[in-house]
Image 1 (cartoon, rainbow, N blue to C red):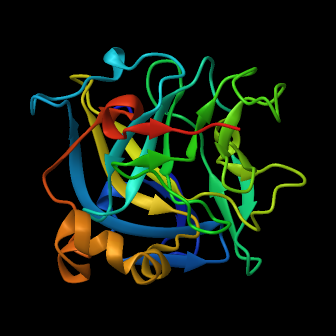
Image 2 (image 1 turned 180 degrees about the vertical axis):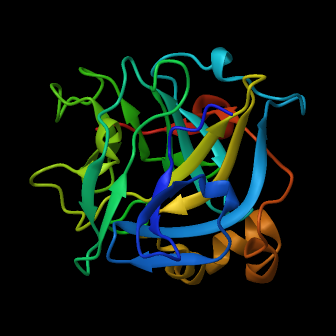
Length: 242
């Protein structure tokens, strides 16, 4: 596999070793730069249930898929150029982790949770205030290219691990969905790197969980085997950008 998101963890000898995220089980919270939760390895598919290929992703198109839970939306992007690499990031509590960079042939493919770290705004089937914007798409931030939450204008840089922009009301980055690209160009989600707010999201949006997923118990189920990827414009009825 073309695995670009190797994590460095402390081995039995005390030395740092690089391993693929999909081989990790459980949670890593260590001082060596990891803040990682493993989940089921899930293949990304198109609306017809066919394997989605990395080469099929349009540049700067917003794609949505649910991972690691059936109710937690994530943003998939193919950025216009290679991302930065080895970015040091910090949770709201000051815990450090290292974002390794994008995947794919051009190191430009990334995925992040689409639940805003400020006040949990997120895409749903009715409306989305949360999406990647090209320069000029936001009238309030016309020079900004990044993930913008128009609820309160939180801004994140997807080329740098979704680090919060200076002046953004968010207090930490968006969590990264760790991806692997197979030798056949297929795309797989394998875990979550960084601080996530899934429990609070499920609690705050109880009525939404009931409406769209049949209740919190079903909404808390983990995504398994495959997850469908849709363009944001096909996922939601209304996209709001300020």
